[in-house]
Image (cartoon, rainbow, N blue to C red):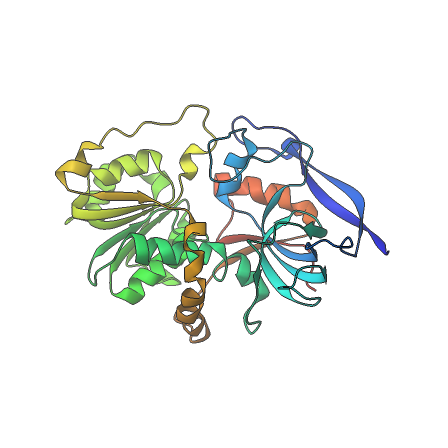
Length: 342
């Protein structure tokens, strides 16, 4: 059996506070390029890896989550795009391109193939399957259409609006005929939201000392839909600005991930006063919608009605810094790590 060297990113130990370079390290092992006899595993060459905020809670030990904590001393795992080199599974063949859970390494043996999806079309950038055509895209689609149940003309607010999910939610809302405001953490990002993605308005939350007053300024008649990616103080301010029968999709809470003690939310009485519905959701519960989502989004991409911004770094050794950068807002758009281009 042919063996090759295999560069890997290893998780060192459980993290408290903001993760640093010291919490991960690069090592090199060897791997056989053949699936073990009788196994239904899939052997892949990783091409693109996805850096996502949900990976930060996995760096803390917990047994009370929808996804397992990383194991100290083991390869970090996450979503990625890969090419099948060998397969013992009847649904995958050598040469197939796939997206789903994979290790942060050059080559990987995937034994849990339930979350592996064969890529149906390659006339768009392959890296899109880490974002707009992968987990973040389906998250935006399910969260906006299924959870928020939008109506034309409604007022929509998106936090972390230039992230992998937020940039899509805003565009879906505009295509649906809604008024859309997004928040981000820099002037550059605010300009992109308004000039590239077509948001009606956008603001830099770091420059706002009073979030309640800020939201009142952009939504004098209140918010119908809030797509929440940050939680914390922003969610508290939004609750004071919701309209009657408003809906909040709780997608992520990146403001809380590095805190040892989570911030409280004080304005919950407004859920009753305004009859607001808040619903959290996990994208894996909506995988059955993926074919329907592709049918909707692919024509929009090809016609230029939806655009997508990626922040790309080269090389597996760049992955730790790219992941850490998510939590200071260093990335502009979807954070992607290029491991190989075929």
